[in-house]
Length: 193
Image (cartoon, rainbow, N blue to C red; front, side, top):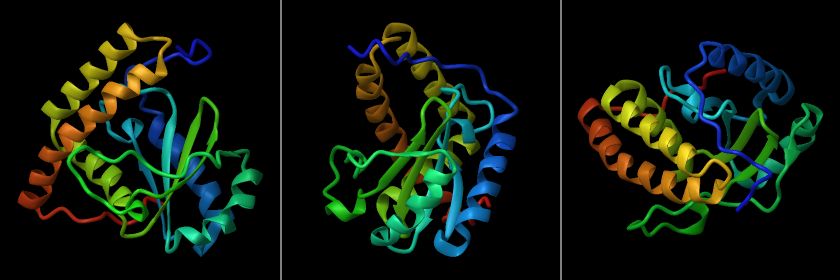
C-alpha cells in the first residue's frame, strides 16, 4: 500500500482547458519544432469527466531517440524526469513490439504528467483515440467516471490497486473506441498547440 499518495477523483473543472493552454504555450515557446504535436490527453481533456486534478500532456516527437533534446527544456519548466518509466502498459490480447509502447516521462508532482511518445506508434495514437471517443460517447464517459469514483472510494491510499483495475477498464473501452473510429472515420487530430 502506498499511503504517501492518495487517489482523489474530483468533479470536472472548467479551468482544465485553460490550464492546459498555459502549459502548452510554455511548451511550444520553449520546444518549438522539436516536438511535432502537443496534445491535452487523459481525463482532464474530456469535458464532463471526473478526474484526478492533474493534467496529462502528450508531446509527440518524430523519433523517440531525439527525446533527450527536450529534457533540458522540460527541466527548465520545472518538470522532473522519471528515467525508470520507459514504456506504457501492453493491453491484454495484443502482441506489439516494444517500440510501439516505448515512451519517456516527466512530471511536476501533483499537477502535471508529461508523456513523450514517438509519432505513429500505438501508444501515441491510443490516448488520442480514447480522449476523442470519451468526448463523443457520453454513456462510456459516465461509466468510466463511475468506475474511477468507486475505485478512489474503495482504494483511496492504494495507487497500485487503482491502476490495476483502471487500466483493464480502459482496455475494454478501447474495443468500443476502435469500432467508433472505424464507423466515424476518426483519424489522429492536429496538435492542440
